[in-house]
Image 1 (cartoon, rainbow, N blue to C red):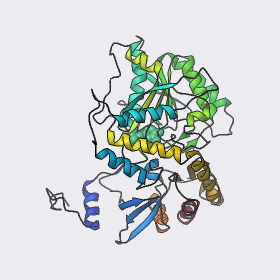
Image 2 (cartoon, rainbow, N blue to C red):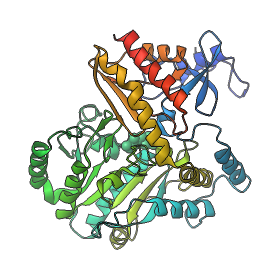
Image 3 (cartoon, rainbow, N blue to C red):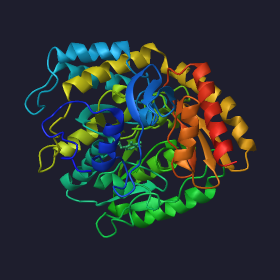
Image 4 (cartoon, helix red, strand yellow):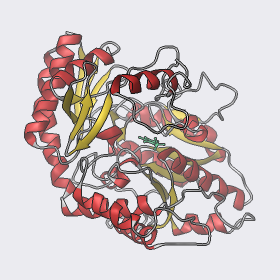
Length: 453
Ligand SMILES: *Cc1c(COP(=O)(O)O)cnc(C)c1O
């Protein structure tokens, strides 16, 4: 079918669900999908609380608990009265104005809240303090900006450094600079060989509790071999998300931070997935679990509670001065939708809610429920590992997941889940009740048992 066959040109009429899905299949790209073998997405009609209302292929409606929080963003759930009110209120003033030469209250007050919440290390006076905020329009762009800051610092000081140091197993986004520091095997390095810049990858850190001596020795040797060319170390502290849902000891983060600082490189933390309480430990940031404050920090995903796309780069006064002192005279970046007022207003309301709801207690509750609920998966033959940290629960299989079958099974039990690689995982909304969480874990364990054995 072509677009013309659908007769839609210039006609904004809504299609019936079956036709809408047919058009989607023929003309709409979905993430990491093939136009030759389209991904058969489910149609979502609306969402409220922790539930999505899906229209199933037979035309019936099903309410499913969103075990994914819409790719980890919708921490307060859907149709949140406080966020809806913030959006309406801001729509009544303006939904967007440019940020060049203009500023506005939603951005200012969000920046204030972010700096107030930012990680600190009061017990360690050598740690810096985050003092400046640059707004970006997505997580990937914020990583681009963070990397550009690091490059500009060294250019400004007349000794350009061109490489970044990171650990294997990471994920930093899909635009080119983030892709270049994403895990070279799980990422897209072979596809873009010769196009992506080649950075330096330390071995994947062992899991928490394992001996770190070998990892630390080889990481130090590798760093030493490249020290003069490293502009910054970049990593996801404590939890590596889309690169494989693995956890590591805070000591790993301290080793990498110390290496960077010994050798005049910056420390960039990508807290796009880990931020806003997701990794537990009674902290808002994974950085706090490490006792480290980075020089540059990226936040995104849950920043607007999943309502709109927005990200931010926080940096220290030192970084801001060094970037600005160079020949360029400032940070050379400025997205069209920078600091979009509507997104900023919602993000401000989301941060207020985060504080008011006591996110630390919410995530501690999720951790307990996930630990108990996923435990039975350990007994399954197909399961290699079960791990939980904060609001993240992972069942790792010994084989690639049959994702579509697993998802269909879970949907029958009222749960939306999207497994990938060999991972069946959940990052539920923070507001998920104990009862709903038990439904999620039972559906995941049941789906693995039924599909993989
Ligand atoms: C999702 C993610 C990104 C990319 O964010 P987008 O908003 O998808 O561009 C970067 N880093 C981490 C750790 C992420 O989880």
